[in-house]
Length: 129
Image (cartoon, rainbow, N blue to C red; front, side, top):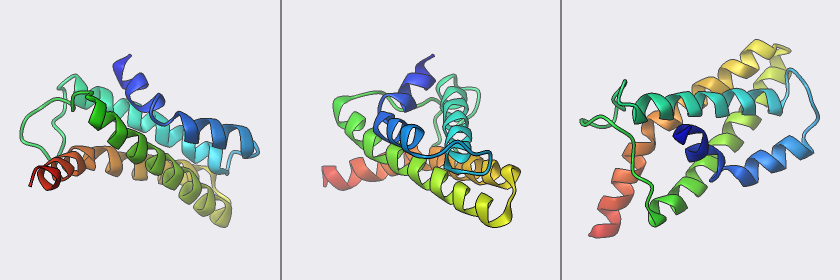
């Protein structure tokens, strides 16, 4: 349940915006957004449960939820879902393939969630100097 809240609460502005403004389409932005969001939830759950170690870290586990990291999460997750949704929607409408639209959303989300610990580590190291 933690993984659902970890991505859903910080990304609420983009989720509400896209889910209310974009038309329903199997090849559209909503399709890629929902697949990207679902992939992020699964990825966070795998990292949080320590079943998988993030590729950019040596220790297992997910990042703690601190007030400053909540701000980073808001920015990162909103950008992640915007990019996954609109890139997936664009590729899907260009190729007329709902599968490719979903695959783009899944791929972008997988890469972004895998690199989130690296972004945070880089953020902390640059802010502490």
